Amino acid sequence: MNKFFLNLGNQPLANNYLKSYKQNQIRYNLRLFFNTSNKMVSISKRIPSEKMFTNNYPYRSSMSKTMRNSFYKLSLEIKNKFNFDKILEIGSNDGALITNFKKNEVIGVEPCDNLAKITSNKGYLTYNKYWNYELAKKLKKKHGKIDLIYSANTLTHISNLKNVFKSINYLLSDKGVLIIEDPSLLECIKKNSYDQFYNEHIYLFSAISVKNLLSNFDLEIFDLKNLPTHGGSLRFYIKRKANKDLKISNRLNKQIQNEIKFGLDKFTTYKQFSINVIKSKIKLLKILNQIVKTKKTIIGYGATAKAVTILNYCDINNDLIPFFTDTTPDKINNYMPGKKIKIIKYKKNILRKFDYAFLGAWNFKKEIISKEKEFIKKGGKFITHVPKPKIF
Ligand code: TMP
Image (cartoon, rainbow, N blue to C red; front, side):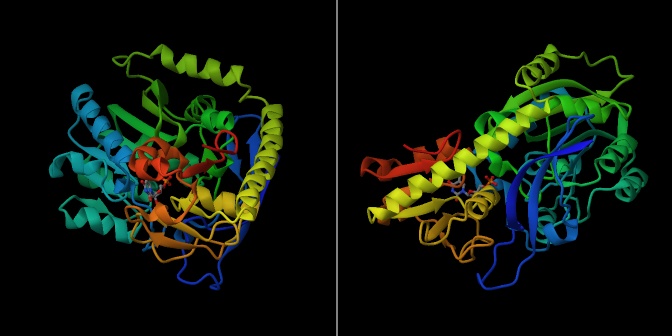
């Protein structure tokens, strides 16, 4: 049974950065649910994929050094640890992972035309398609079974998870390995980072819920890693149940024990989370209002999809944060979805004109702090809402 625990209000589509704030845009009610039987946390509203993953999708995985490094490290690990003839990436974005491999070793699947073009123009075979059973059938006919399937921050964006895993199950070779990574529910609840929820993040995975999900297929988790990316992610290593060559690591049980200890299997945990989120909103608004009252200025740093949830849930407008700055070309000069807050191009020293920077990209805090030493030296301060709203 799906039980409701939090309403994050009326929200626009998170990656829908518009040229004019007056443009009409889809809105939906962002409500969160916990499934008491399979322990999956999800949002209730399902926006059709074609409306979210358009031909000018702005998010680019290669935009941050942190993500480029993370993908590079993983490519080394794959090369060292696993035998593969071909690697398939579901949701290859702008090629942050696949471009670390030889062109004949990788196949990308990417539904957003503008992103698929980036990798196909570089000579990487990229299917400009949504991941589903029809595509899996087509790929099997053309390339045979695949030894290594990888997907980061994509599977949780697809409503029909049964179809997702049925298609993977169909295509993965007998000794094949599936590696998936997505934000960790445990980290989200611990950090009170409710901005992990928006229309694209339909599910937030835990080891408990992924284990339950895979029990419907000939697949099981054999290893797991906690990663610092995206504010705390889980990387699952998955194999066929019959493949006994790969041993099940005790990291899986450890993670499940931690999740149980934290109460991820209990509805009361999510009720408490919803109370913490309301408190976080009140505190953040208090901090922003106090700053503006003293005639100091705030800029948003990192026009993330996550920040869209915060701005719209807390109803933060341009009287509090007049601008956001970002490095992503397709976001620059557009408006934060749902708000009259313009995104301006990131330039060195852009922060000089502001007293405070609100960390929309709090998940890149380390990278940003080291980049903005000058701002800090001159007395500039950051604001974050994670794990609690504060100035630092
Ligand atoms: P994400 O949190 O969804 O990965 O998005 C991060 C956004 O933050 C992306 O639009 C790029 C932007 N960004 C900057 O503008 N400057 C930076 O230094 C970093 C690390 C990210």
